[in-house]
Structures are given as C-alpha cells and as structure tokens.
Image (cartoon, rainbow, N blue to C red; front, side):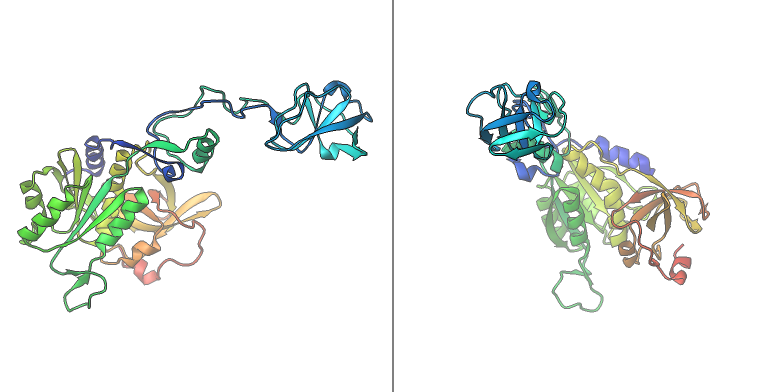
Length: 415
C-alpha cells in the first residue's frame, strides 16, 4: 500500500501541462499566463501631473510670487504651448506635463484670483510629477509565464493595451458516479436508493479548482453501462470515477478501466479516509478512481486530484500549504494510517487553534459543512493531546467564529 506523500508525488510526476489558448482579457482572470508579458511602452507613457493643480517653473516659485494662468490642461488634453517664464498652467491629475514646467503646485498650496495664482508654500523641484517609465520601462518583463492572473495583473495588462492573453487551457474533467443504488435529483426517493451527490460535489470541486466539469451521469453496476460511460469520459482531459473501486463482487471499475487501456499506476493508499483510491493513465490523460463515500471522495479529491488539475493549468503552487494549529482537545488516530480529520479552525491572539468539527466517521457528511480545515494526523502518532501542534489545511471561510461547532457528545464519539 503506497504512502500518502509517495502517492501524491507519483500523481504529479505523471501530470503534463495542457496546451495554450488566447482568451479575452477579462476571461484570463484566475488563469495562468503561458508566456512572459513584456511592456511595449513605458508606464506612465509620458510625464504627467500627480495632482490637480498648476504646472509651473521652480525658478518662479518664491513664496508670495504671483503667476498668471495662461492655459488649462485636462486629463487627456495637451498644453497649447510650452510654459513661459512667470506663467502657470492649470492642470488636472494624469494630464501630460507641459514643456518647460518642472513643478506641480496643488490647488490647496496656492490662491487663485483674477486668472492668476499666488504661491502660499515653498516648492520642491519635480514635486507631484509622475515621470515616464518610472513604474514600468519599455522592454521590462512585467510578469513571467506561470504567473496566476489576478485583478492586479488584469490592471497592468489593460494598462499595456492587452485585449487578449495567452493562458494555459482549463482541463475538461469528466465525472462518473457508479452504482445501482443511485438516482438523480428530482426523482422520487425509493426505498434502498440514494441521490447522486458525488457528481455534483466533484463537479463543484473541479470548478472551484479552475477546471471545466463534465458530468457523465450514473453508470450502473454492469460492464455495458460502465464501458459506455467510461469511453465517453476518456475523451476528456481527466476522468474521475466515484465508487466501484474496492473488491466487492460488483466493483467493476478497475477491470473496466484496464480493459479500456488505462494503465494502473497504483491502487490503495495508506490513508483514512480514501484507502481504496486508484490512479492510472490513459496515454497522457490522468484517471482517478475515488471511493464512493462522499466524505472520502471529497477528501481524496482535495488532497490528490486538485493538485493534478492545478498543475495541468500551469499553476506553480499546486499543493495547499500546511499550517500549524494548536489542538484544543485530544485527538486519536486509531487507523494506523495518515488520517485526514475534519476540524474547525479559529485564529485567537495571533495563533491558530483546531478542534474537531464533529463525528469523524465518513458517514457523517454534515461534519464537512461544519469544518473549515483538514488536520493531517501522521500514521505513527496514535494520540495528539490538547495543546500539541497539528498540521492543517485551511479550507476557507471565517477563522473567528465563536459558536460551538458540535455537541460535546458528537465530539467525544467521533474518534
């Protein structure tokens, strides 16, 4: 049985970058740049005023000096002529600096009357002037390939006039739930049946990671149904199956994947939950066979599948950083495996604290909703005492909620 770190490293070693595409600027948000962005011109492109005020010559700026206003330059305009000695030009923020001027006097530092200004404060040469190229010079590499495009990158790309951006493609991720017990939402819930939640949970997780989910529906526990659905799924960039991956007499997923040409890389990992997870390759396409239990499927997706999707899209940081939290209660790991526990994280006094989010049996799906973190308990530590450190992933949300996360009896019975 493969160790967790080895399994994740093996998956990532098998993952290749997808191709690239050009998208409109706004559609590049959250994507990864596939080429360096080199400035074609200076930013700012010209010397300009950083304040609403008056463009003047420093040589004319003795306190009390009176300067006649002979022009006005709004943003987007230009001065009619160079600034003459003893004169001033009213100017707005962002407007090009008139020739021969070397100081901007803010409105509040002068008194304007009868088309002239009187200076009330001393000036400093070059004050309130933004020089061409002081932010970005023509030919500068603004950011490199592999950079995730955020709002800040959108801003500078727009400032450089970029209408389209070359980015790595988003993977189409096919999602297949299996099992005769499953029915789709909207159908009457007959006895012995369960609604297909895994497809929607995994699709949401794929979309959250930046991929494009493709829900294939439900494959029944027979070879014909599995083959039909899996063949369709193998046309996508990634295939994820849920359930049918263990050793039951109706667990046909692995044999059918092998029959369809998927080379199994590993099956079974030394983790809880999610031991029965399998990973294979169909050519260069990754295939993940996850457990059918929704909690197990979610955790194995977060820890194993999500990093692969991020790497395919060119992300540099694909493994969520581990934070250190202080346990607020004892926690036991009876499995002898790396145990992923659902926890509630709180930031108190500059430190991060963790406690159980509720019952840890994988049948308790509500505990996932109550968790905002996953604690990774090492296989060789059976007990973590209150006050000891534990490694955690933060799942997002509020770190300062004070309400109790579970009843005491739920917490006590959860380990």
